[in-house]
Length: 239
Ligand code: PEP
Ligand code: MN
Image (cartoon, rainbow, N blue to C red; front, side):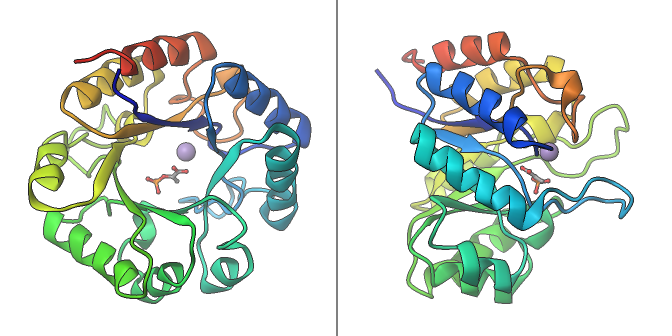
């Protein structure tokens, strides 16, 4: 049986109750890693920006009470100094792939780092960004393909599945795929997850919510728990 890294959870959350309900459902499915953003980098300053430090405390409660590992995006050097070694996985988002000082600070932490591909980054730029982290001592790096900008307005981004064999063939890094931010549509997420698994990725980072329309952010792309079950089943198959 192949073992894929499945990270799932809400884009962000507005209360502990919402987070807890999502987290306990993920735990029931055997998922070990919950994703949930608290420092949100939103295109519009009018959009919900996350619960920030208060949200981080809620994530620590989830870790303590449910034993789930925490995956969350850190966006500043100060946040990395404060929380970098307290969470299990530091997510560096697409907007920050080129923020080399931030990458260097992340490289000083012991936690696993997920480095998302910049939405207009070449493979070479992405791999060199990972090198900024690695040179500081942290070699526990996972690259995440999350879609690149295309010209089609019908999807949020274009999922570049070719990144999977490229990274596997040319680097030692693991590569996971985020089909949620790639497509921007919940109905595409199952098909793209399966395609990514078939192409040989090491895991998936997926936005899921017990009631997607309630999501405070990215509700159009969040999948429900039944869809997540099907993806988990598929991920256990030998493809
Ligand atoms: C996220 O995964 O929460 C996120 C904001 O993704 P990205 O940086 O890929 O847009
Ligand atoms: Mn999101």
